[in-house]
View 1 (cartoon, rainbow, N blue to C red):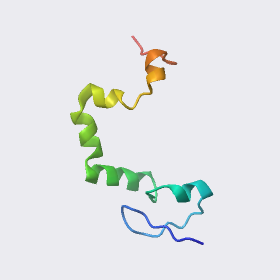
View 2: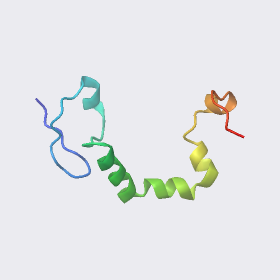
View 3: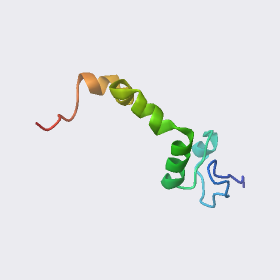
View 4: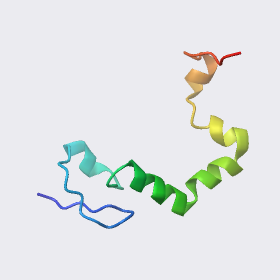
Length: 73
């Protein structure tokens, strides 16, 4: 079995992995560890500095043109 370590804290991840997960470049223990990694690397700051364009870039274009949910008025 392949040992996989968390990219943020460096601990060995003990849960079983699906075969497609081994192709991922990065692995994390849990969501909190992933969030700590993103905060430390400035991901959220870059998104907020980009302003509206940065927030809209994560919305798929097809969803922007034909939204499934409308904003509440």
